[in-house]
Length: 452
Image 1 (cartoon, rainbow, N blue to C red):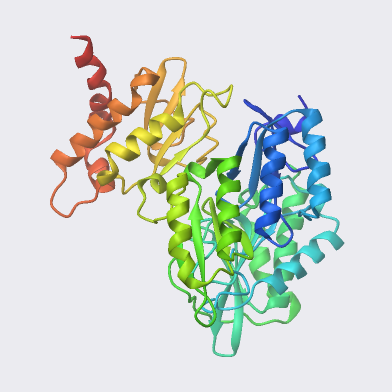
Image 2 (image 1 turned 120 degrees about the vertical axis):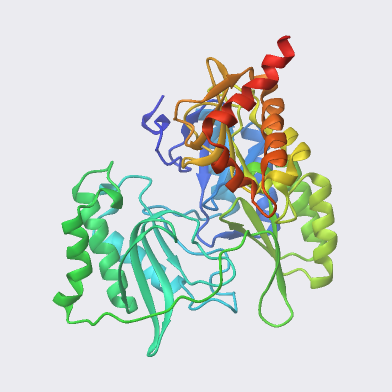
């Protein structure tokens, strides 16, 4: 087991991470996209050298699972031979439609590149941990609001043009705003913040900065002679990257998601081959575990969606599977204690009507698929499938039942929601009102009744 087997490491192509089903590598192409033929070549390589499972992460990275030390080296060589350039260094991420979305406030790519160069020139890459990241968000139809980052730069409109809101430690809703400034100052504050993080060691993040340091960053403007600008955010609320999105003229990009972020490589090959036939010229990775198909004539979007749905992909933002975060679980992952994907499929099929909240199904307490708290979490452990209410997979479950019967326990909770919620009340609000004790008792109750 190498240094990258530990939780929190970043499984880059050059340093695979040990997981329950072998080694895992993560690819971030420089262009953020593949031609369909390149994606096909990569999927074929995943079939040859891994266990045939490919994933798109919540941050829009591509992962290949089930590798060995030898096969990971062969995969890296084939990625090289395909000419796929992958990003290295501190991740500086932009949205999946950066530069081509007519609704974005500003093209974030030039500023993102300036930040990358400044970080490299400052020598910060080896001093920062693998999970430290920067987001540069131009706004538009597919924002980066749901992606957490140590430093966030978001384009906003001001009376004198475009400025950038600089915030740290969080996503688009909870990050702490420091200043709203021009592009030069935004870059400099971002690098200054990363310097402060680096000084705390490779385990540190921006959330570890003291209040004094944050005040210093916000007041850094005074030292440069720059004046803080007043700006307003535009571009609308963040959407799921599923379905058609208008681009320039009469063109569209089509978003298709992987259920629970994972699909067999042979199905990705089938979809990409169909896309080639229909005229797709580019496939982009999108945060939210999706692929964006570009270049095909607009009248071929519906046939491509139909093919994707037949193969098992998610083609509607209303699909209940988009509300469930599920890791590979057993048998794919040796760390998993429950068959997460089977449980997820049963719940999505039987209880789609009440899934207006996030359900996390985790094979073990690590909670890889959804590190943050969820309204409900089913987590595998020594005592079976535990139910955690409004917390992370690491929390102590409020009740247990056998792993094979977890979906039935959830169905009892779903039935309680249907009978107890008020007119117009969401399922999420009903869960909050019912409270953890009643929910846990209902989850356990199905097994209790079965024993009688």
